[in-house]
Image 1 (cartoon, helix red, strand yellow):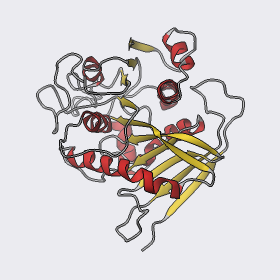
Image 2: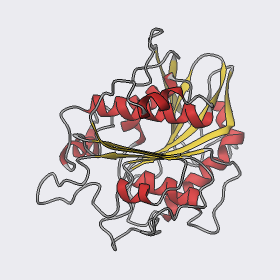
Image 3: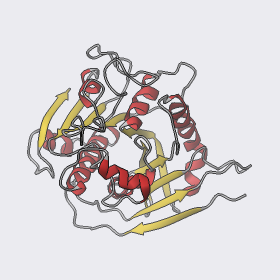
Length: 320
């Protein structure tokens, strides 16, 4: 039995100066289908990897998809990050899943532990992962899973590698306050995430807590969303909420299939996905550059209002 993979190359602009634009690195998108076999290099889950395609040593970011979504729906966001010099590993955690996120947390830990021995085999020649600079990020339920793993919510689960940064992209911890999905992450005690030994960024959508119609709940309900996650963060941390954009507005411009079509129907959305995706890609790059690469110039420029943003912000905050 053979692990199959496909790749596509993206040529990026060499004149880009903004973190909100495609960066200067040529990138490759590699899809790896995990299958049960004796291949020791096989990942524990199917992966979508975005990587610079030219020689270099680059930080690594694990990015976790949202509830019942495909990792491929984030391919444009992944390529945005890779074009700025990051290797992005996006697992497909499940295809069908219940409310309990315990298995997602275990799978993310397994993938993290696989990186040291397995990742290099799927990268272009002369591209090297710097696993001492490792970020963990997730969208929606994936954001909850990222926080749960970083906080050690499962006592018997640990990772061999140490995370250097944590990011929640419109994270959601359940249906409502008091209706959290297991294992619960939020404690509703301000700054209770005091055992996170890393900087944190939380990004929220202004329309995520608005119902698209009376038949469906909000995709990021009040009481279990970005605001609640950030309230429990300790410094250093930063917080952005895009005013007129929805919970899924960072996905690819076109998401196909039944699940892809559902991303347009279930959540309140903005006029276009492209501005929100550019914004999230840009603040991710700025945050990761600051805390993985030691270059805070772009994050400071965003904080101080010295750069034009693709979206209007409703809220911002920095704990330093």
